[in-house]
Length: 99
Image 1 (tube, rainbow, N blue to C red):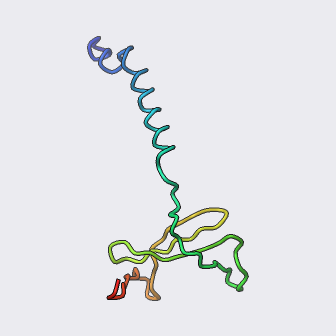
Image 2 (image 1 turned 90 degrees about the vertical axis):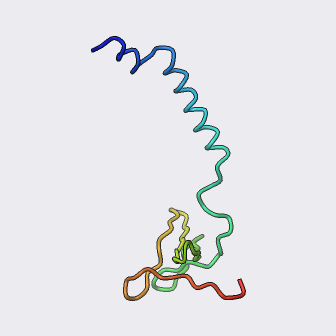
Image 3 (image 1 turned 120 degrees about the vertical axis):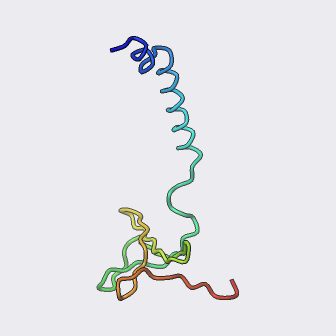
């Protein structure tokens, strides 16, 4: 391999500094970034098909670009999925005229 290309790909003085910089950015982002779960989630109870309540389970609906999304939080996880109508198409959001 060409020595100039080898030096360009792995300069001994640059990689440790770049690694420390990347680790610092990740550490700051982990501290500063908010949690993935939004704080304003409505506490609608989540129930199983037989009507029994899921412990600490909740759900709510929100809109992004006129599409309705369902967010579900349980002790085992958190997910956001697009809401579907009975015909399988994505449900559209309808916002009342006063809001």
